[in-house]
Amino acid sequence: MRVHIAKDGQTGKPRGFAFVEFKTAEGALKAVQSTGMDVGGRQVRVSLAPERDGSGLKRGAPGGEGGGHGGPPRKRMETHPLMMRSADCWFCLSSPKVEKHLVVSIGEEVYVALAKGPLIPEHVLILPITHYPAGSQLPDNVWDEVEKYKESLTRCFKEKLGKGLVFYERATAVKSIQSHCHIQAVPVPLDREEGFADHIRGCGARLNMEFEPRPDWREDDGLQREQYVIFESSVPRSTLLHLVPQGHRHPLNFAREVVARLLDMPERADWKNCALSLEEEEEMAKSF
Image 1 (spheres, rainbow, N blue to C red):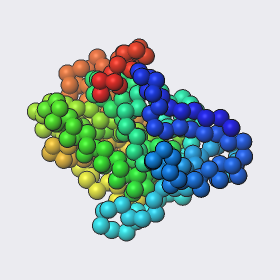
Image 2: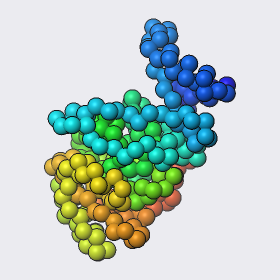
Image 3: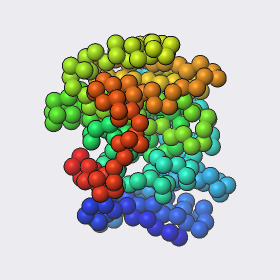
Image 4: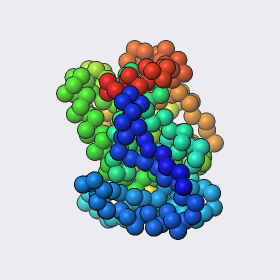
């Protein structure tokens, strides 16, 4: 058995969660039965993190109930190896490759981390803990938590910085084992947010990419297997979606470049140009 206790990079204190590897499936399943047990006055939550090692252990697809949308439960794709944890994934929270010093908040199904090579210091990612390739494939209960984080971040940046917030997701590798859904959130000046929709359409038009309003995009089950790029602004609330045609290659940095130009920072469109040292990243996380 191997145990990794996540600790704060600055203080060295435990962050409230850990990852445990067992020699046998029986041992892991027995541990899961301890969920709800009182430890030091707090109830612990234990769940399985899926592996791709053929052991048969996999986390059940979250949810199964409607997610507060007022309708029946949303149809989901059947559990697929793409939805299982990849030990090589940079975003699966249970993966040793996750740079946990950038993680700033962990929920039940979703966590938030500062971006690597951020556009600005407050640039964050909203990510599912379980391995899903795209936001279109998230079960309702996971998406509900994504929405809660969106609402909280929107309030935070408005109250603390007097700024609006834009979100974007580039889901152009929905069939890749390495693809892990991550929704980017970047605060922008309020006057820039108001013209965001026109800005997106203008940037897309230069590359013959059409963006259409799709506030109900999550209700389209057919989208689960499609490649897309989506932008959303918080005030006014608007959602613009571009479906990438089959066989077309979407520009890797397009979505980030759109936001970089909105901020008058075109030179920061490539995250590698914005790379920080470990010490700078730890200080940024502490400040956030």
